[in-house]
Image 1 (cartoon, rainbow, N blue to C red):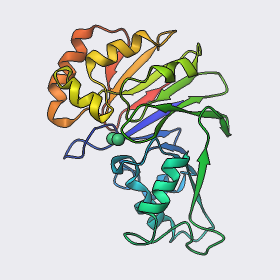
Image 2: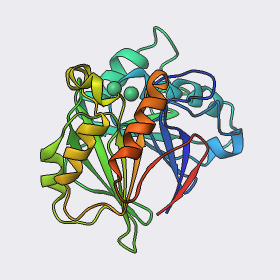
Image 3: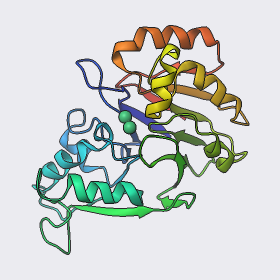
Length: 255
Ligand SMILES: [Zn+2]
Ligand SMILES: [Zn+2]
């Protein structure tokens, strides 16, 4: 599996794009960066978008993608998939027709450009050669991470935004996570605010990793707040954790 990092930052600033990961050019995880990164041909290849939670920095690409797709001559639709709370929030607050057209009923009520699909935690869905399973994580709103497995049984887990989330690792069980893409938003000195807002720090990450057995092969820290980037980077380096790296926008990960 090849995962292209469209964005992996915890905020938007020049040189820092919000989170979005494109698997093998066709499956997208979150949409913090989308139409500002992919050209129109690349946008047309996306058929399924998995959303971790309803915060704007993870859903904001959806309306702009829909607008680009509506002018495509061929009949076309994109599935937006997530847990019930997230699907309802997108429907009620993002695509309710008040701040942008409701592309779930455009071009007509029976065939919308966007289909909203509810997933159940712990229940896998198969798309092409991938098995994708949502597992709840611990954020300030209901949120899910995604375990993605290919036919060779290679796996990655993308947490989206999360604080300490021990039960997630219990649910995943002993399946090897070859690549863990995990929230480390704040420096360790801001642990209180991290816990209050449902995020991790380097110190909390270290604790979290002790709960994941077997240990992930590679660990990528994401969603760092740009203001604290240098501090978080140096704190992560000091942890000396095998396989732990920072991700950069535009990078491709091979799993
Ligand atoms: Zn969030
Ligand atoms: Zn976020």
